[in-house]
Structures are given as structure tokens and as C-alpha cells.
Length: 374
Length: 129
Image (cartoon, rainbow over all chains, first blue to last red):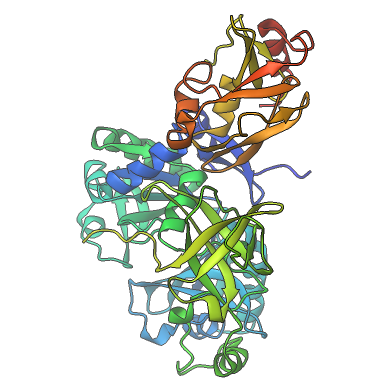
């Protein structure tokens, strides 16, 4: 087994009593005080996540917009300076290499965030495509730490930790250079929890200072350090896809419910566009749906979705659960999975084979399961 | 820190067994198991009358993130089931040795094959945390 990598915040996690697990080649905190407690803290107050394992790619130069725009499904010509967009990068077949957030730091200056598990693949993909073009390319993942401050009180915590006005006045999906607790950061009003919040990029050597300042300032406001466990239940309630579960190189964004990030009419041709046009014209045989368990049982990643027979005896296998868990905010057992298009409408009954030979009734429901109150 | 009462016997699968005054044996999971599982969300138990082998599977316990099988410490017949866990699985977190008990068994044999508290704690020390 290869050695697991540690983020600059590893010792902070140990000091906070985190349970550490291997994740995508890294030793990461899965929980501190407890997954459910952390989940509720993010929904009602605030949570602090170390997501320094994620990849950061920097592109700069006259052709940087074109280089990225040729690889992703978003229309970057419509992305103003200081704004971010969620999208996917596809291969020639129109299936998903990774999901990304592209941050436009200036007219010719971009930051692209990719998944830890895909970092090498995506960095090589971008580097190759940038070759010979008027753009610099850097995989800056090893220089940057990333801390996510999420929850309805994230703004109050940021203020209490000494965030400057540029940061506290950010609009959703906007970003700025600024300072918190004296630490220079790129701050973005983005996140992966279905709550308001910030993602804060800083140099590795400042990560611990920033982390401690946010923990200290946040404590009286109900902030909890939160691990990968809570991150997963929060994103599932918000129906946010997880690479390796909902999406991968065998799934296309149209069947995955990500048609909204695919701009087939954008001015520039992009990798996978022709394939996606064909898929769109033909229609997908399967679709990603959200479901709620009606019987006693918890769906998990990898369980078969079966025809519901009216009893626990499983019917024919018709699909696959991509994510499933109790939903702490909703007090229900929920999941996501692929089903035949004919069964994708709200109210469809399906079975989830939670044990070999035993299925539990579930119903297709509207997603997201959770939407933050406005 | 988790505690391991000396009046209980233990298995390597982290179940406990307690011989009651009426001759039945109560069974549940240990504080160690609860620590590893986190918040318990579902306990699936057998019906009264089910016959169990020693180390036979008698149910499942699920937490937010994981599912584990439950194994009977001894052979015997299930004579009582803690129905309270049906609606309140969190009782296992709150009191693994009392409120969170799972089944009572009319034993076919004794508890001699099981570990005492000291042996169980020594066994836990050998596990990789």
C-alpha cells in the first residue's frame, strides 16, 4: 500500500479528536464529535471542513479562456470576472472525466478545482491541451490548502474571524482576493452542502492559522469541525453528485441529471459535444433519480434497484443505487440511483435490495431532498 | 472511555452476553462496537422463537455510514426481543448494556466459551485503531 498523504491541517484534526480514514490517497478526518451532530451544525449554524485534498489548477494568459472552454460543458464566454461556474469535463464519448468548478479570477486568469481522486488525470488532460497555446498551466494543488466554511452562520463566523469587506460582501458563486485573520485567501461563496458558505484557498503555510482562527471565532456561534461523513450526507440531501458514485467515465451528464450544466449551444466546440448531441437526440435509456425508503431499510452505494413485487422477494434487477444514507435533516432514509427512463417519474415504486434476497419498497421523489430556506 | 462491565461476557464480534436470574441470556453490542458504528439508525432483530446457532447471524445493525451483522454469542432460542429499538435505535448509543439490549436467549449450553471483561479489553488492545 502506498503512503497516505496528509494535509497541512492533519495535526489540527488529531488535536480535535478526529477519526482519520484513508480517502482518495489521503488521510482525512471522517468525523470529530459525531457525523449527525456535525451535519446538524452545518444546517443550523456552521461547519468547518478541510478539503485540502482537492486539486487546484491555475491557467493564465490570452488563450486560457479558450483552453478551458474547449474542455468543459459550461460556456465560459458568459462567465464574468470574479464569478464561478459548476460544470463537467467530458471525454470524446460524452461521459464524465470529472466535475469541476471553474473560477474566473480575471479576464485571463482562471482557477479550476477538481476532485482529489481525479487530480492527476485532470491535470494531465489540461496540461496537454494547454501545450503550445498562449496560456500558462500549473497544477498548484500542492501549494494550496482549501477550507470550506459552510452553514447559515458562515457569514457571521467569517466576520468574527476578521474577514475583510470584500469577502463578507461576496454574492453567491462569486470570488475575491481578501484576508481573514490576517491570512491572504482567495475566498469564494461556493460549497458542497446545500448551505450558504465560503470556500477559502490559502497557501499551505497559513492553513493552520486560518483554521484555528475560524474554529475560535466560530465556537460561540455553534460552529463544529466537520468531516467527510457529514460532507457526504449534506451533499446527498442537496442532491449534489459525487464523482465515483453518481458520475464517472461510464455515465453522461444528461442521464445524471446534469443537463443544466451542458451548454450544447455555446459558441465554442468542446470535447464530447458531438457525442452529447447524439445522446440528447436519441434520449437516455436510464436516468438518475432520488428515492425515499418506505420500508425499514437503508439503501447503500452498490445495492441493486429491483422491480417492486409487493413483497420482500426481489423482482428483476433494473438499476443501481449510487448513494444512500439516512438523511439527518429529513429523518428519512434516502438515496440516488439509476433506473430505466420509464420508471423515472415522481411516485414510481421501486425495490432496493438491501440484503441478498431481500428488497425494501422505495418511491421516486422530487429532488433535491433538502433545499435551504430563503 | 468505553466501559466493559465485569458481569458480562464478550465475543470477538463485539457482542455481550449476560446470564439473568431467570436463566435466560441477554445479548447486545459493546460500547466499542457503538463507538465504531457512530449514530445507530436501524436495528434489525429476529422473531421470538427463532433458533440460533452459536455465532449464528441474528440480525443487522446500521448506522448512518455503515451496516454490520449481529452474531449470537451462544446457541439457543430467542425468547424476547427489545421492541423499543424498532422506533428508537439510538437507545443502543445511549445505553448499550441496558436500554440497548437486543434479544434474550434460552441457552442451549453455557457461557464458558466467551471472554470475560479483562480478556475482551486485552483483545481490543490488539485491534488496529
